[in-house]
Image (cartoon, rainbow, N blue to C red; front, side):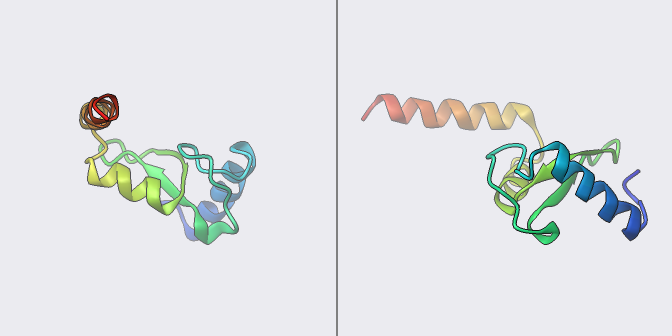
Amino acid sequence: MWSASSGKRRRLIRQKRLDQDNMCEICRQFFKNDKDCHLDHCHETRKYRGLLCTTCNVGLGMFKDHPGLLLEAVDYLKKYLKSD
């Protein structure tokens, strides 16, 4: 599915924008146009997941799409919120 033609990919993006109320699936930021959203995909299965804004897409990539690392980052942030 990852290697969809550009026309098929554009149609998929438009459909996902409708399905997601035109917002990033993580932070809920509104998309201004198709270029504002990134069609996220699993690097192992190559299947599409959802539409993300640039910040959330890059953020997942920086954490190597690894849920455990993201949870560790959440714990880290919570630790320092409590100590203020």
